[in-house]
View (tube, rainbow, N blue to C red):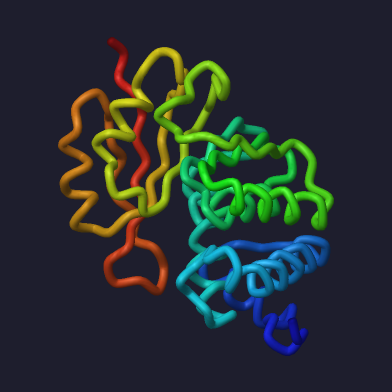
Length: 213
């Protein structure tokens, strides 16, 4: 993968600053290495439909890290459900080295890619769980935050997330504003007001807390 395709340090810092996120030199290097792997593997594994490096930087990295400005995730136990190419879990891990991350992905090919990213970037405190999320419970419990991006069936996900076996107290969702209007009607959860994703017209972050039974 030609290095010229990977954004420079100054471009990465500028993009993240638009989301009020600051990173150090090591984190910039990890983002660049991750992006090289993503671009190299994408044709074989179909990790993302987004092909332009700058779009990948904004949509996958900046947007994945953004909730860390909304809630304190440092040191938290986070499960990323249906992580695909590792978003949002791996960018959050890069930003928050002390967080404990579980990447839940049912595709073995994608899981192989995730393991390669973890190895190349030298990340600790992150593991790949090869499974459909519906089949999981105590294996990933207890969890401080469940994260999900563009799942589609948020109703089924939230019903599963609320079960005692999962042990999740809060969820963070990346979704369109129209979907958010439907999700906040799901019973069993108390929702914060949706937060608009910077530089997006329709995407929001939605954070919910499980109500006591």
